[in-house]
Length: 616
Ligand code: ACM
Image 1 (cartoon, rainbow, N blue to C red):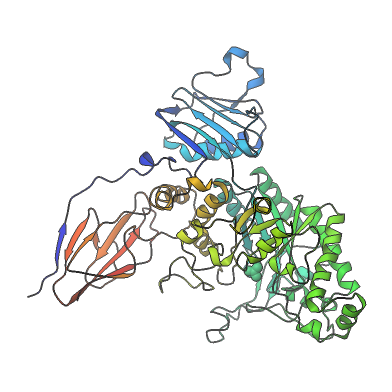
Image 2: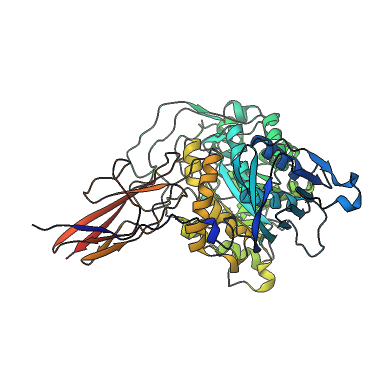
């Protein structure tokens, strides 16, 4: 009888991830980390000193400690005599920095008897986030922090994460939670996609129908648009943010050094607005409804004076709510059919000496830019705003690959890179496996997101300076719940953070995925986030050929267990635990399915991988 032989080779001790990691588990990898010996012990007696006690970072840190059971209060450093300024058993948070520290930078020294963190503005906040990542809460009386000397600052000034709240609405608490996780990993710009065909989500006082009508749709497509059978949920859907709620979120983000870029889509992706005010369209007599499925629609704004007046009014209210420099005006995927069929548009093209409908789109964006600039703000648009000519001061968000970004930088325009083809679209799947949840398509595994470099080699040094940053996008057509949003976001957002923050020379996917991600994921558990559990390191859906197979796996989450089967069934908690490397001998002409699953202490599960061990 043919037998499959399994030998468990040797029991290795469980690796302690952060101990051997040059970056001490920190994400994004800092510019420079020097590990010391020993550790600082934070106790109830530890004194917290600050030369700017009301700094947002100081308040954030004491609040963090309070939630961990420590009620240490802050002593104003300016009130102390000079000799007392580096006290034993103290943590000093100081805005006093060396002049060569770049913007948003910090320096952190952890000695065994005291800690000093220096950073101005956001720098102090980021240093404090690093400090929080380093600390280990042992119990209610003790936190330890390993000795180290870190100097750090970001590669890019714009480090963005986007959220589409039109296709599916996410409430105030979720948006705050989203901002929290961005802040943990030193992202600084939240691109809030507030309007689209399927829902208008921001209260505009002057045009109440935008939310009375535009924030509601009769039902929602529940399977893949354009591919599967038409299937709708037959359930009304609605949601919007009041201006008070928007102000609350803006303040919340500001406290975490995050600027919000609101997006008001125009001239396309505007069905919800057109359904509310049909006079915005080129055919006002038609009846419009808020879209119930996904894609590109023909009903777009008509470039009339009435439309421009209304857009200016809307943007006026938006700019009062959002103090940041940028207003995103969309500009992508504007279907030109309605314009082509409109006598008004034909006449306007002739009157304004425009080439065609693309020229008309450019005219539309320029008009909007003029108004936004006149109010002291700048526009960002998706790369379609290049078509027909760029508005003079526009920043371009390059999503259809890098070509638009390259072209814009060559025209001396600022650029934010967010190419869907390079792992920046988090609505794409994280593994090509039928076990992954429904997504819009495309494949953006962690490794792809991580390996992206936003500065194209085609650009010369001066042009490269126009690449002001990078962003990932979370479109939510197929993301109806907060848990799924977090699943699609994490851990990829940590890879984005490293792309946006860390020097290229410090990027190392093996270290990131096998050491720091496993260290960070339990922290996300503790903070209450859902995430995609990566599959066991060393396991994949693949076919291997031979007769003897050496299988060596590691867990992608500290403390998680890998279970496996050889019987073709999907593994679960009741199956064999992987504890040490295996040697599996497969008889002639047989194939063995070696299947694995990772289950975390919090009960989160990876998808199952199936390694076919084939002896031909
Ligand atoms: C986009 O993904 N339509 C910008």
